[in-house]
Image 1 (tube, rainbow, N blue to C red):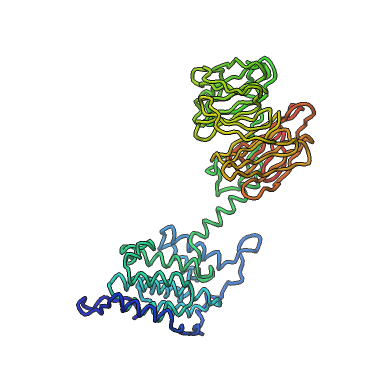
Image 2 (cartoon, rainbow, N blue to C red):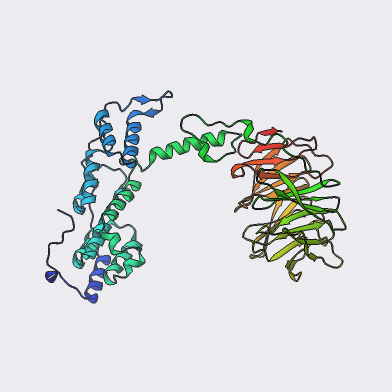
Length: 524
């Protein structure tokens, strides 16, 4: 048999010096590879009876494939008797007799027989045959090494693995394991990994991924197909806005409009004039609003979902343009239009610091991820950064921002995003010191960054919303229409489960929802 046997007394095993081993290894790597042909004998095919029979109403599911996948699922779930009974009753074996023999030989460590059986499967792709043979012989090599059969391991490497003429770098790694046993640890292998029954099972898993699925059914294939079907149903559902646990195999998935906010629950009326900006805290416990009445308000979200006034923040001399929550939600920045930034303590409502610059107005505000630095766009079109005490740390001069400007910072703190021209958005890389631009044909009125920092939602003067991908190459993904804008700045944002929706305000008192994938607007 070709398995690794351990019946030879340790005292009679051949020992070789490091110099002799290096000499033999050099000879093996320089010698001509042995040639060999694939076996001509083919594996006995699965029973042909019913091969063309279809199941299902569409006539696209082959009965043999369907039964084999179910059988595989039963074995994977641990229902060994049920799996065997299905094979027997259907007359459709999970694997051919040749593949079953290969599996048994691998688990028993009969390596030479395994390689011979592999050639009998009848694979047309010689590269696959060589790669599978490499995996089997590599396991044989390691088990020889672990049993201290150095010369047997060396002969396996010289006469069986190297002649395959594939994966040369791995062959060099294996040869190094002979001279230096510690090299095995660098390859992520321990003695327990090599000799355990689990290692041979893992080898079968590797072979299964390598061989065609018609030869060995992939692991968890049925689960994968079901998950695919559920994903298709979920993505086709324009109202899907719930956790995946709501999906069921018992019926096709379809959400109703009740999954989308469509009725007023509460009206907040503490401001005395137009509200310009709203932002929830990261933990969802607070809502901040800013107004033309020169105030900002911190609202608290109660356990029952209701919202109550916590603090009214006053002190700005001009309308409050925007707000920004600190990463830990303990502090809030408010920015008066072309005026100053104020930093507030959320718990007490106290103003902790005022950021301003002589002769220059501030028009936007934000935090760096560490919560120890803040930044702002300036009326001189620069971007400045301060520590919490107001010391200026950096300033980017030039055409960096506009007088009315949204601004965002990616979660890693590396990129600042701002409007630099009427029809252009700047992506400033703080580390690479490089700029990239998103250029539109129309005037940009506002933008919103997705939570994962991969997409930018841009509102335009012509009543369109554009979705841009900024992860890697910048490209326009989709366009959305439906909202009305004539006088005011209209904002849009990502929202819903997994941020699959785009919500936009509208001057006709409508709230417009777009499903990111379907691009079909819904009005409430």
